[in-house]
Length: 631
Image (cartoon, rainbow, N blue to C red):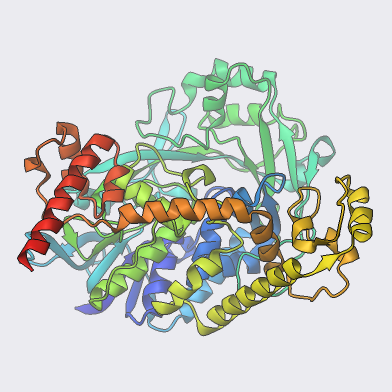
């Protein structure tokens, strides 16, 4: 029998990060994929990052993951979204060269010490014959369809949208994964046979057309940032935009075609049963749900530097192919579009994430971890974040180390996983900045300051990462102190304020005080700041944000302190909620199912009221009193 410490099933964005994390933490790791050409594939939009998602990528990088490093190597253009708003919601997003991203990830996997990359399809999970002391099954390996068996101390399922997947175009369907790759059909069946309760979710993707067939004169050019900030904190190289994206819009004529033929789409014709994403609607959903909208914006995104294929973001559909052509050609700039791939919907199996612990280990099966879209999420970034955490925790569980769990107050990754395992999801889950209560503290610019020390302490982030992080922190702190201690005369300040449209000052003023004004930014201060040091963009941005938003940040830190008090009130693992007097029936059922680790987590469970939390607090107080009485 071939023996490994960790086996990862699936080499999408979750599986790649999981396998790399496990191997980098010293565990002999096997990464299985149905096809080596599927590695880090982007079957939907060819981009990394976006609102909330960009924060996840920065956090993955800060902890020692791979996604940020690779998108910097393979980007086509990059933009910081939401720049017109506050820094709490600034989010980087980059168009990827999807073929190069796949190639670079494959290289990283092939070259990673202790990681074996293998093409093969998992047929069944294998379990120990004897249950553990708590009655739970224990995973012990994987059987491939070829008949080969691999054993392991831990298995990570990262099956993406391939598990039991089926592709739909109108009333036609076939067993298939995304982009024509094979589905993991047998594994889905054996998991059901083994007692897993699987759900059906769905998503879709637009058609691709050739760039040479488009009329860009009828579209609006969307350039990337001239001097984009890198995703990876290891990257000092200047990034330069390579290609533009383009904007165009649907129209009422196109909407009428969709409305008249909506029953010919897979969902409206009753051919699919899966639940689709709320925030990434097909064009038929947009037309049906927003009949008063006269147009919808579309983004045309190049799929790579060595291909003519263009992705049409915002126009996923499962209309028959002939109707797809008619519809797309009603759009300005697409009148003569030549298709390379048609749009489709895809259904796939996934788990209820309430069956997982915050480490992403299955509650009923020791050693089985799950990451990515199998947990009900959507998006490459959400998948990669879960993959990283599952790889870390699989490795640590084998070594008998404490689990690695990020709180909601520490990271967007913490928000993502806590939402999944505490609240669950009835539709493909997508991270958003609005889901993070403490988003002003969890900014994209300070992910390294929040997380790199943690990544280093567990053995994943390198010493180079930590040195860079500490140097940035030092430079930012010194610059904040300098700006607070450097004063300029009223004449100097008022000349600057007059140019910027600000109210004049009556006396000398510190540069930090001027920076508090909304019309003044760090760059504008340069003309009256003679002794300004060159500290680099990252430290400069950090210093400016910390000064400008100091009051708001302090208030949020106070909120975090209150939050952490509830998180620190641990609930006994053997607490029998059924016998606690005062708990409502729904609360007893939900608490018994989810088994929250803390009072804070219990308070976030849907169906658990403040009155129920009071009952738990009283019970914890009794336990503490009994412990003190025994001493």
